[in-house]
Length: 136
Figure (tube, rainbow, N blue to C red):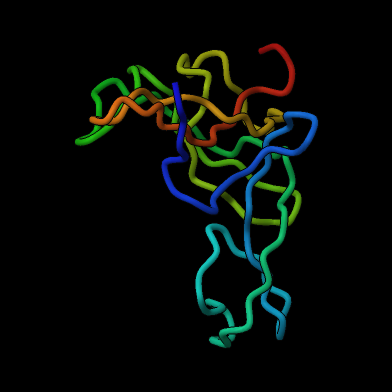
């Protein structure tokens, strides 16, 4: 069965199967962004270079989603939270751990690619998520 990303250009996988996020860095002021936009939110220029962001981060906040949002293809419950990347960005993201009691502020997290489910054509839709880098 074939797969496709939920949105092109958000994440990737290296030759060893390690997931990573794809962001942008402003060529003028150096600000890093995720997801990548056509212009820099800090200085407004349109010279943005694609960069590979860190594959890990630190958990800042979290909750569990128990009802599926409109159009959502995956299972519920699922975790949802904020992870700070080494570049200083805080990413609002899906979490693989759905039990909030198993998560802690400052917990090390790593990026993974996960399947959401099939789209109407039967293709498996994948997305990025964060999972605890150590057993909770």
